[in-house]
Image (cartoon, rainbow, N blue to C red):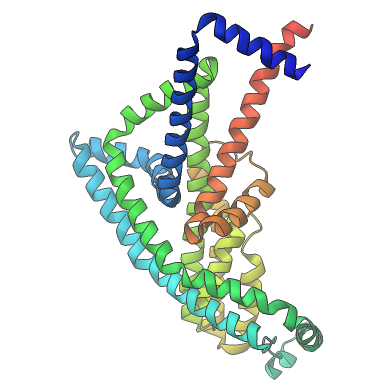
Length: 369
């Protein structure tokens, strides 16, 4: 049946086009396919940079627009100032956090590969704490002994993970360079925001004519929601946590701050890291220092609940699983840059797909009735 359909379609095509025209059409389509394939092959290494620069341009466009009006309608000057601020953030505190995290990753991977990964025993001073001291000491001591024994058993199976972590750390320099290029490219995109929006509308109009403007608005809202309310808040929270860890003299402070960022991005929360750190602080510091650091880290732990409603105009409807898969998949595919780009792109694809399905159901509902 399928072979008959193919013969009929070819026969119909030959009725409208002479033999030479059919051959020319096939050659043109083949050349077009080859050109598209080659273009994708050439730009594939730059896809994370382009994606991140577009995300930055969309997420920070309201700031750019406000700054441009404040400067008397000078968009190029506003773009230059905003780009310098972004570069200062990337090269300054973000680099400090990244280098600290890299040292922690290398140390962790080295201990993992050598089979020396252990959980420290509890300090004796915990026994002197009122009420919970003896129970906490006993629980910590048993957990340390049991986990240490378990880690010795599984250490040979965890050695490949050490290689993955070291490879990820080795690509961090390339990731930083990609970040810097993305920030610079976003600076060039700011002044042409309106033209890019019109180009996006024209492109979407050819695909979904009835929903082009709605999909473009949804895309912009999703990018801003995830980049500002998820990624941005997670970065701020991890930077503040890193400062607290450094002030407390926590070993591997950068790695713990990086863990805070990951947990915040995947919507698990920073308490998993902050609570053990606060316990360690109370075992190692004097009363005044421990109290001040506890208050500071407590504020860091709840800052996401304060900032998210301020920067997100609408609630995030993307499931946590989608963001989690975006984080893991983006990191495996594109390294450090993919850690941030992955959840944004996957959330965008999810929201657009859900909106497309809903609009399609709304269009077909009257017909089915």
